[in-house]
Length: 316
Image (tube, rainbow, N blue to C red):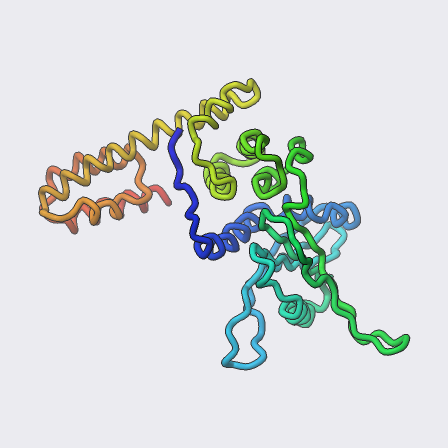
């Protein structure tokens, strides 16, 4: 089984990357995310007919102000024509959460989409127990007169027990299992459940994409132990075979790339490290074809051109 990169212990790297990862998750599985976090939406309004991702930048109060974080507003249209604008904010560090910023952003979206029901939601993703809660609502009133009431839907993944969701057939749930709560001795089983559930529910492309997500947030480093755990279960035998084939394929690809890099570097008197970027995105078969063409190459630019053509052929 191929060893994936172990996440850095530098917290700045984690804080910088987590938001992008979670946004991608909701971009790839918007209906599945809605079904888990808001099952009552489809129960009330019927099936989702259309999904749109709102990509507008929140308004600044003053031009010198820094830009507000662009969160994830998703516009859902249901079969009975109800519209739900679901604003999701992802927070790994609760100290950086601001209910006032969320209020401003929500008001801006309500102004831009007056026909939509805007539901602000905050998903806290850190795997820690809190000593102090975040502000859940804002309210301003005088006597019996209410001037402002604002609250949001609150989710903290660490409040969910992972073992309670092993049988939930939702790819979003499977991907998020490692961010939920579990005992230390349950860790391998949680990862196995995430792997096997995602393998059954998602395409192979999305499985390859989000198995890395699982590895990062579960800090998977004992790849061999995990592989042996997977092959011991009958229901994950196909997954075990896929992972083994994938590992063999990646090993062959890396070996071919390394050999070709050395040959090109020696011929044109450059560092092998400067050759590697040329091969990004190429399959083992394409690398072998490039190796055959390398013999007739008269310049490094010619090899770059061939590699570019092969990448374009994969897209087409």
